[in-house]
Image 1: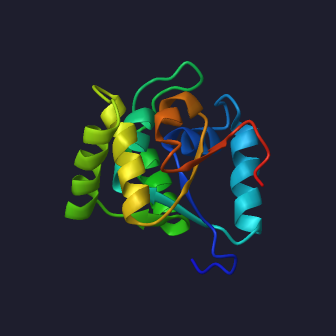
Image 2 (image 1 turned 90 degrees about the vertical axis):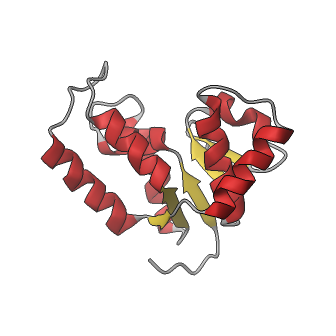
Length: 153
């Protein structure tokens, strides 16, 4: 997926689930933000971790949707693979994650967010589109957070 703007944004799992599940809260807002970025020729990236989280979310019941059958989930994943730039896990990502864990107070599930930031840093992406702003506040020295609820500059 070629871009002309040079802008690169990492898309968090919560944006993907909202954008692809019609009954999800903020569905329309997530679709609009992604469309806005695509319209501005922004390269939108996700990682293998985000795909795993997406599959986990879609295969369990949510308050706004029933669990999807595996064939439907795999079809959705194929759409993601054809739409987004996929960033692989790597030894460099692991090294950066361990460095972040050393520098920033994290523990438990917060390690997953640290891994997203580590992936972004390794692949030189400094903007994150997410609805879970609070989860990433501690990483503001490293990344710029694009909240779902605000217009993207």
